[in-house]
Image (tube, rainbow, N blue to C red; front, side):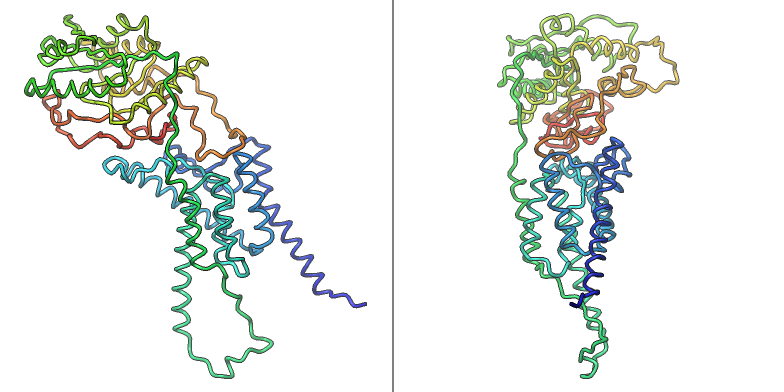
Length: 511
């Protein structure tokens, strides 16, 4: 009986390669698990937190859910049976390129165009997480010979849906199509430059190397991979109802504008009217002793609380810091006993149409945290408008604002005096040097293992909950209350990117 020695050698060699591949794919993941480290990649982490190491290690990051683990197992089976044995280096290079492209897209579709071109803004381009070898494996299969044509779209759908990562696999698909087209162009040019061979040269011999067969994955199969991405375009953000235990009062700060009284009254009334259909408690406060539009609207809205502060403050510099401090002081004395939350609004920031559900969702999360002993703040606008503040913060905010408004402030003269809205924002976020630093929230190094995958790394460790887009309009840009301030009628409008989008200290409600 003759034994095929060559066949035995090849079999042993392939088994060694399979065990080596398995060790490369799974060994670092086991090590990361024992080190209790999370190296999941997000463009947000790279751009805002400097997490460049995650780009290098994300292929070995731990799966985030049972569904993601199933996806990894299926990919491992395909990797060991169909992928070329020496393709891991190419897969890793592809992953690095994919991560860098996603980082660029995350910047372009948020910070770059998210301000003035809201239609191009994409929250998930920045926040969707990526890990594992799935995207790179898909690229390798698209150019691998003897791969069944139906395998690529099927594996694309399974990986994308199980991991819940359309941006990751969509970007990988586009990069694969580009690389495929580039290779075809390069191959056609090289063939065109080849010298014509004679008939004898064209006859194959036993020593003539045989070129590998072309990939059976057609362009049609690659285009079919787009179909798994379609359902994600139909998904709408989830919303939460108004919490039964929450009490909120909207505090509108008003100051006279150097324009016609009727125009000033129209701006203020438009802001008030945008909130009234939702039946919130509304208070309107002014520190100006002469405010004709305020007086006129007081008679038009008899059921709302209007208050004009006529106190003299000779020891303070007149300005927005004093106005805010007085507004908070009055609200805390007049409304604080029966109300837990106050939403600060400037009188030219009406609610965008159809966006009250965002306020409800933010309040639902804030109140849920408060009942669990964790008080955070909300922010759905920009500047000083749209800040949702628990009343326990008001005493320290009043103190900080008065430090900046006092003529004889104890602050050194060379200390930079920040804008009042920045003082409030920094305090609520607990930023360094804000005098409101708090003990860091528990930031989990390992993602919680659940049944289904989340699209992004959980952001429930921030000190503030924001909306991904502005849900307050700005209608007073051409009628500013400050004489020296430039007009900006086209800025800070509905749907613009929230200024804090991407900040590691915030949790985002998708709009």
